[in-house]
Amino acid sequence: MAAPLIIGLVGMPASGKTVVAEYLAKKPDAMRIHFGDFIWNYLAKRGVKPTEEMGMMAGLFMWAEYGDIPLADWANNLIKNARGKKLIILDSLRTSDEAQYFQAKYPEKFHVIAVLTSPAIRLKREQSRGRFGKVTKLEFRMRDREELMLGVGDLIASSSHYIDANKSVPEMQKQADAILKQIL
Image 1 (cartoon, helix red, strand yellow):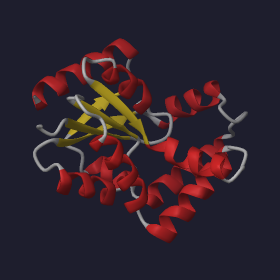
Image 2 (cartoon, rainbow, N blue to C red):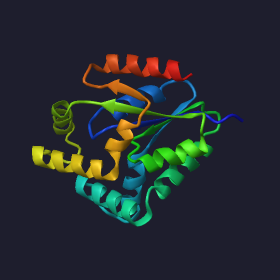
Image 3 (cartoon, rainbow, N blue to C red):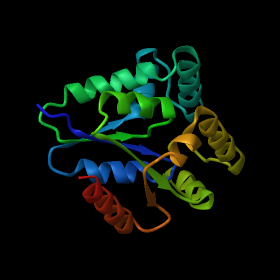
C-alpha cells in the first residue's frame, strides 16, 4: 500500500493552523492528527487539570527530557494505523526535528505548510477563543517566546508553502486547496 500524502502544518499560536487542518481533514480519505492531543492525553493520564500553563510546562518538560521523538513516534503510529487514508494532516508541528523525522520516514510524501498571521490578529483570536480564560498581551508574548525557543520560527522559515491567514476563512481554504493541488 502506498504511503499517504502527509501535510505538516506549522504556525504561531492562534495563527489558524487548526482551521486549515479541519478543512483539509474533510477531504475524502483524509485524517487529522493534532499534536496538542498528545500533551492533553499525557496530562489526563496523570489526573492533571488541563490549563494553558500546564500544557506548556508538560510540553517543555517532554521536549527537554525526551526531545521530539515521543511525539513524532506517537503521530507516526497513528499514520501507520490510518489504513485507507490518502491524506494525513499533522496539525501543529513545532520543531525542525519533527519535520526531519517525517521527511526521513516519508521522503516524497511529506510537505510542510506554514500558516502566517499577524500578532495583532492572533492576539485577538486567542482572546476571543478563551480556551483557558482571558489572555493578556504579556502572556501572549511569553507564549510566543516559548514557541520560538522550541523552534517554531525555524520551521516556519524553512516551510515550502505558506498560507496567509490574515484573510477570511474561505480565502484560507482557497489557498490550502491551491497548495494541495500544487503538491499533488
